[in-house]
Image (cartoon, rainbow, N blue to C red; front, side, top):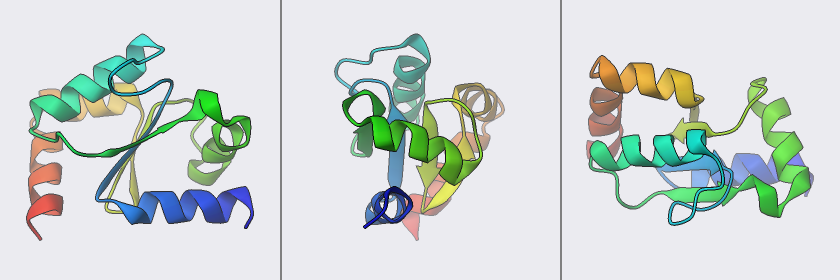
Length: 106
């Protein structure tokens, strides 16, 4: 299985998947930590987190997969939502909560 297939499997295995630096319990960058806190503020306690620092192939592959140059990257129901800035903006406008509510109640 190539890295793109592996990523596709990861983002479809769970409702909410976050590619980040570190883990939710121990984020290794401020943007990853902030994104975890925003998910938690929206009531998402259980989500898949993929530590890109643990796998260089995934770290580069996710950027190609999404055509997005930075990490963290949030996926909900297999769809790319965005990076830290987009997630923060969506949260401040109430859009993140709506997206999560609709995705997790279907």
